[in-house]
Image (cartoon, rainbow over all chains, first blue to last red; front, side, top):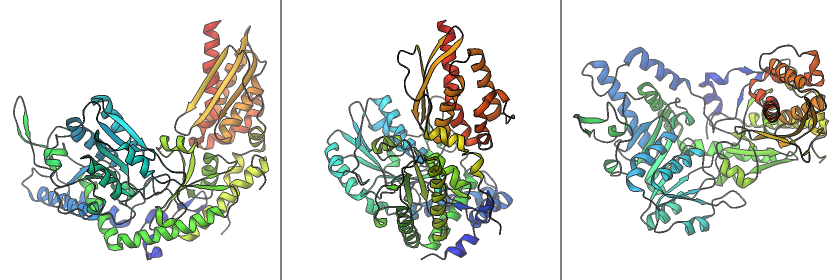
Length: 415
Length: 148
């Protein structure tokens, strides 16, 4: 298990009062806080190393290039991939998915071809495919979910056929917390010759990921949801795939030879990184990956599983609270969505914020799922390595205060 | 350590909660010539306004929709404040509500019960909840002016 008190000391932001109460940060599915090591790496880079990478001959340029490139191997290792040539740095997981939609999709998807998604996707794994479908005439199919918030595998199996060219699904739902059986779905995709993309934005930060075991072809993730800075995402691709893909954006860094009519491309992965990349933040992302590797992803998962179990128990003991998604902590990640009878999620969020507690309220960029759940919005508490049981207790107490406000108004039915 | 008073009391005043619990003029106005609606896609708040406008006066007015207590009580108070009032007054009140919520101005006396929304001004993320129905009203008054 994790030494949470020691970990908390390494997150300066947690040492503050918000609205007169100690900050309780439970919005980790949106973005996580950064340990001192990550902030230091960022400052150190700008104070000692700053130079543009790949082209310079001078010492700083070489040093910056080495530091930047070293993060590729760390990112690959984090998701169980080998080597470094199959990691492309992007701005975020959303851009990683858009990269595949453009650079692979435009060349490989045609009219009538089918792309299979699910109803629990984040908008980042829906809209890029809608845009691709508009460009190519492809058809989108959405796998259903079951009443307890799992993917309906029978339905998904029935959607995957000879017209399917790509299956793209979320590994861990940002709303329901569900951990999806990706390996099984990858096998379905490969049986018909389709590729499998996994949106790992909510899994890579929270559990040991092994792209080999998942059997996927692409895996997209985001640095800022795993202790790293904003502005950095990554795409892992199965070896050999990137070589055959067209560039994503054109410009410097991504070319080999430029002539008047056309150019030739740099080798992968540089072919996909046009222009000066986010060097400083990639290097700081390396410090975040080191931090997680030191903790051990199995320990991270064990801590989150325990705190999620504690939170689900605590929330369900409050009359009028319902939880969306699986109740069994072994089947889910640490994003816990809930609703309170008679109190709108935005009112809940405002009231718990007045106790210094940060949670999310809204549709969580998953409108298809919210429509399926027939909910306009939910509250979401999401946990990470620095969260404690005392913080869960504070959340539960603040929820009871919110209920008191609305009991007074008589908008909640007496329980 | 002294625990500060919770800050939500100023937001969730009795009057707001009362309008949330017992919305006034909720429902369609049969045969209303003006039917307007507004959606806040970020949070899912939804307000529909039905109204009659004749001879420069807002006649019957009703609302329905879904959303948080602030969005719904604001709409309820709107209908109560403006039912049977001149259009010119409605336009003035729209300006006064915006001044109070957006510019942080002290509530104009003409606002009456709407003054209860003053606490929302301190929470910028919730201002859009309170304003939704007023934007919808403005749209409705424009429609009425064009039709007239």
